[in-house]
Image (cartoon, rainbow, N blue to C red; front, side, top):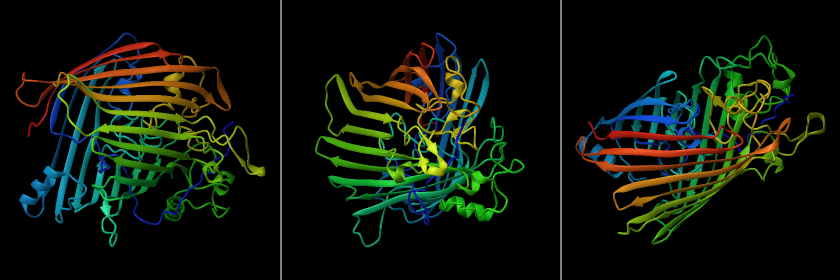
Length: 503
């Protein structure tokens, strides 16, 4: 049985809040106006983990496919045209273009294989003034303090699923707090959006998200302290579980309760005991901290993401759980034939969850059951992809060997992951990167995997410039493998040719 959820909002949320990435903008994967054609070939019915995870839901999971994609992004100055050109060229957090701009981004993906899909991972418009932005639509984003290129993925928002459509207002990059002489900067946004219509269990589900992060230290300084929090909520939809007439609490008054994370405390007139003894909606997020050192040759980033989804973090009973990482980036160039430019090592641990017991009347709030929820049974997912770390997968990906966990989102949220990512160059002509991950998977407290499932997943990516189609043309390829107990053994080859800078 899935027990009642008592979600904790860790900090007060009264301001427009912010997101953070290791790059200074919350938007990722800048679109350089491109077209790409490629193919995916696998030895079985499943695409290897690292060829399809953290790719914003655009790579098919069911093996062989022809893939065609393209995207464009353009920014118009609503003032002087010369300053907008300089803003686009510099793209630094220290540059503040004090003028109005309008930006549009569109990216489309067509996958032809066992099924044919057309996806829009990006389709948005944004009005900008300086670092402030109002965005409407669907846009790729990275949330949380971590390396945004080689990480296993931020815990709560990893880029594993298609971006959700939303309305977002806030700061798009670090901005100095007045009277701090640029020693303190913040970045953030406040947003509301929608989940897909045809979810397995719920419908008409709404989405709320906000984050607040700060940085202490000069932007070009040697030492920087990073910290902040992100907050996500699923609320206001319909569910056959723990509701009256199938309706979850909705309306403006409940929106305010949800956004502020206020306990219901029996104040809801038309609601179940579940809602009156918890908070409105399914809340989750991380409380993050990091430390960055920029030397003459190497930039170091150390980070920690602490998980909150219940009251366990407030009581420090799940303090063992979280994402720990270190990223090293080389700042000097070399003429060596083989080079490593960046390395990342991470450990993700989610097996504690505040303990194995949840007894409401005795105030024992363990068994946090990450990404699952008693009311939102289809959990923290979007179009059957996990929104958070891909190492907590939907049950549909593991059902081949492990039984369903009721009709909940995941049957495997107690994991221990060791992850390494490397990036470099070969012969000064070929860019390469690799992700190698080993995980221990114990299922969930109520239905553990016996024995524990161990899994290795790895990928090698290669990219080289070619003159076949003129300038800014690249040939790209990847080799990937899954070996272990959690997923079927599989190998994959992906090849593509990409033309950038078309407009």
